[in-house]
Image (tube, rainbow, N blue to C red; front, top):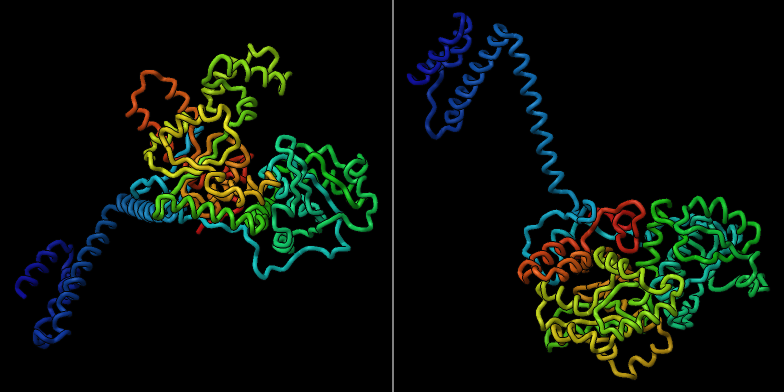
Length: 554
């Protein structure tokens, strides 16, 4: 008690008036009249700390009050500073919490992709878990949603399209056809898969896709019929007559173009064909709901036939058990067919005779572009520097080894006939001897049922690449971007490697670069090129990066 009185008397000396001193010390002066409490009494233990707490704040608030009277201007400045610091602190805490809770997202800085750092150890086979839990797919059909479709007899008309090209270009055309039908509130006639000039394939829609599932899944979005209505008798006119064809649709047309220019003709003629239809719908000039519908078609409505899906699952199971025990595997989409090499107009390693034959092939296929070939050499060098040339099998092998994939890696090769045959494949096969194709994983009888439709064989490659542990592309194209986009949509846990071909060209062409430096460059550059979620940008391609319209924050 003596100590408490002493401390209070010291605090009392700072009080300018006796009245103030009495006010400050009055709580302590009453202790002589306070009953004695035992040590085991809770009230006795709590009372003195409460008195001490009250005394402390009484003294300090008294000091602030006196300071405010003596120095009113300085006190206001001090108070404003305290308020500013308090707000700054609150904002800082909010920023930190927001940053910690922000979804994982890579952003582009020029041509460089920058991604948030993660603490997990790098893996050859998976993206970091912390980078794959921020986003979820959200383009699926809404269960229990009320359809806003009009009655069948109230449709604005029927549209018909030819889906041209290979399997993946046809897939994109089908998605766009559904979207265009939605924009114009029209009925879509089941698209026809047009015979491809390269593959000479005559596959029908029902030979590759599950028609019933396709129509049923989209029944709340768009009316789809299997065939041209029976009341339209001259079906050949739909394929040949210019009066039944809309031909002036520009590439990447906005939704408003269809409403202003195509819809009136459909209302007038009731049935119209849209031709050509390759890339005839834009991305950033249509409503987001339309882009979401395209994703719904691509990832949910378009299902391959059960027999194709079952065969693909068997191929995946065989790849995962090639070593006698469960093992991860890589799917490599090797774009080095003769047509791709010729069309790229890039220069490749080869003999003089080989290059002369390639020159004759280019002259035959693309005479206006080739001319005499002399002007193409500087262009070929420039394209290689910019990373616009397909990777050769040997370049792929060096890249994969630099990334750390061992010789024992199981690799499924999805490709056509590689230009140069076994000699061109030798460097890749020497470094990674466990290379297999679907033909080597199956018997002749197993594949015979799929050979009558080249598109069915392409579908098998598509599904195996989609379900692989790591997917590696070597050149652009619809196949690769659809695979990468689908794997992003499914959760981007599995790696999808998109090589930096410009870096590889520069590094492999540098005779002074050592292996250690090359490995460091390859590993660092490709840490952000593994199919992680990326921010979208104007004129983006939703097939490769479906993040904004088709995925939501988890």
